[in-house]
Amino acid sequence: MTHHAHRRHFCLALAALAASGPLRAQSLFTRPIELVVPFAPGGLVDVIGRLSADTLSKELGQSVVVKNVPGAGGNIGYSRLAKAPADGYTLGLVGGGLFINTVIRPSGFDAVKSFRPIGHLGSQAFVLFVNPTRIAATTLADVRSLISKEPERYTYSSGGIGASSHVLMEYLKATQNLQIVHVPYNGQGPAINAVFSGEVDMTLQTVTGAEDLLRTGRLKPLAVTGTTRMKLFPDVPTFGELGVQDMEVVGWSGLVAPAGLPEPQTAKLVDAWNRSISHPELQRALETRSVEVKLMTQQEFARSMQKDKGFWERALAKTGIKAV
Image 1 (cartoon, rainbow, N blue to C red):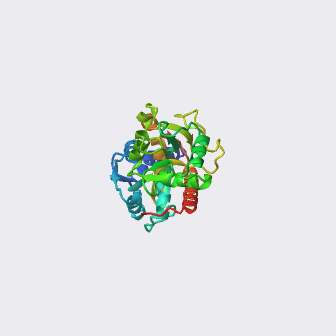
Image 2 (spheres, helix red, strand yellow; image 1 turned 30 degrees about the vertical axis):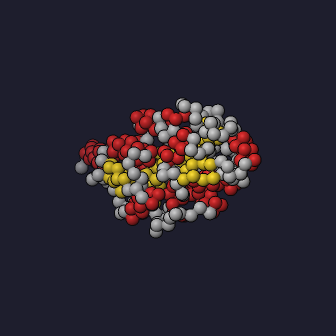
Image 3 (cartoon, rainbow, N blue to C red; image 1 turned 60 degrees about the horizontal axis):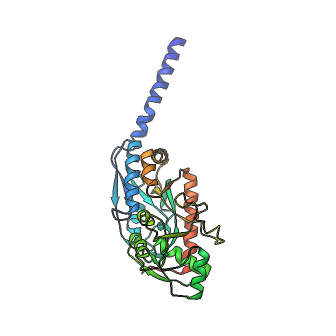
């Protein structure tokens, strides 16, 4: 074979290899993928799941179908995901509630070891809201002063026993020596509505579902969690700015797969997920719901999950909250 023939053969082989790359990547997923959302349809996690499933489908060239698996505070869905085959055809949208549940409602899986992180999606700070018609407070210092003068008079709402809004407020109470009466509701929506309607004085939760209510002036934000102020409330200080330590935790959502997912499928999903959350339509939809999209590497997301796990375990140990 001549030199030119060798060269032509080599170039053809390279071209064939390059052309086969996308084909091999696509062939990793040859049937629809199930995205487990561990809550009922209609809530924020469900909405986020459906929006992200749509953009992920476009990036993978394969259908991603949302499967709502509610119950036990999300544990039924988490358990289904943990027990699924590690083949990339079952994924899950998870958040910080995963770490609360594995402490107060053990279900035979490990919040970290049972899953392989794929990618972060977005986050929301928790906000301390008060109803100014019920409590004459314009600052966190005002709240402290009023409560110290009349312990047990003031009330706060949560989304239920063991909800993040419950655990976080009890942690704030324990670390700041605040005596406030807990009034649990069945979900975040009813809890924020209870403050708006004047049934209770305050709540500490994400802003989702309260956007329209904020315009009425009957929900006043006094402080936010996280390390930076919220875009929605640029004039509202963080707890850290007010001298309250260990309140950097935020609500978040991210994509995980069952532990043991092979590297080729993992790499493909990480790449597709990071491209999917960069879609302008997804970012606009999340922004209207006060979710701040933040791209992380897979390693950064894994470290973030570990840090979040540490906070919720610390908060649960401090408060002694148990499931009912």
